[in-house]
Length: 115
Length: 113
Image (cartoon, rainbow over all chains, first blue to last red; front, side, top):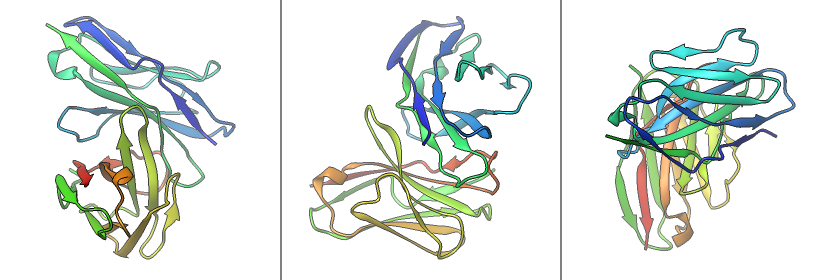
C-alpha cells in the first residue's frame, strides 16, 4: 500500500518569498509517479507538477519545482517568488505506474501568502 | 483543455433519499474516479472505472455505487443517503497509462439533512 504524509497543516509566507511544502511517501513499488495539486478556495483541483521515480532530474514548471530525494522518499514542492494567488490548499499524491490507476493523496497543506 | 463537468456545485438532500451525482468528461479518457474530500483527511477514493461497464472499489466504497454506461459519463449513487455522507465530492478522469495526471471537476458540495 502507498502512503503520503504532509506534516504541515498550514503555512504563512510573505509575498515574494520562496516556500517549500513538505511531502514524504512510502511505497515498496520501484515504479511510481508523484503529483502536486493546488486547490483554491473555489474548490477545483489544479494539477501543478509531476515527477516519475526514474526521472534523473527534478521536475520544474514555471515557478514550481519538485525537490525529489528518492533515498529519503521525499518530494517537496518549491514555489519561487510567491504571489497572493498562491494562497490555496496543496496536495501531494502518488500512483504506482504499472498497477491500477489509483492516486493516494496526503492530507494537504493550507498555504497563505501575506502581502 | 480537458473538461470534467459535475452536474451540481451544491446539493441538499434528505436522509434516506437516493442521490445521483453525475460526471462527464470530454477527452475520451479511459479512467474515471470518484473521491470524497473531508477536512483533515485529504481526498479518499470511493470508486474508479477504467473502461465502460468496468468498476473497481476504492478505499471507502461502503454506502456508494457507481455506473458507467458510456465512456464519457461516470455516475456516483448514494443508495440511501446518510448524514455522514455530507462532504465534498470530486470527479476526475485520466488517460491510460500511469504517468498522466488526473483532471478534476469543480466538485459537488453535498449536504444530507
